Length: 71
Image (cartoon, rainbow, N blue to C red; front, side, top):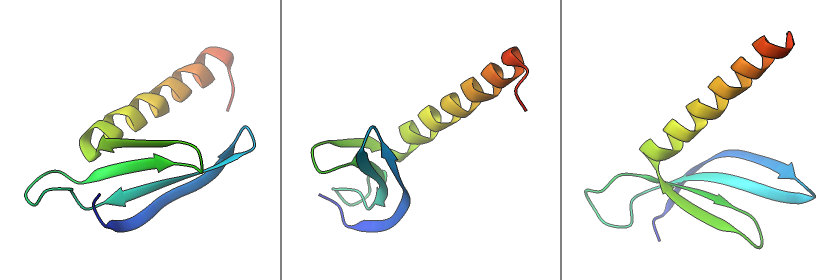
């Protein structure tokens, strides 16, 4: 497992604390990875995939706000 570079975010969802970390790659020369983790859950994804997912969620939020007239 790669070494932690920094914590990107922390938050609570359904009474569970999650942390999102940026980590060095497991193998030298590979892409950095992002860990989304809690005490009972851990997801590891490539940094570029994480960015794509995050942008998709932000776009979905913007579209929902526009459809519902929420500022």
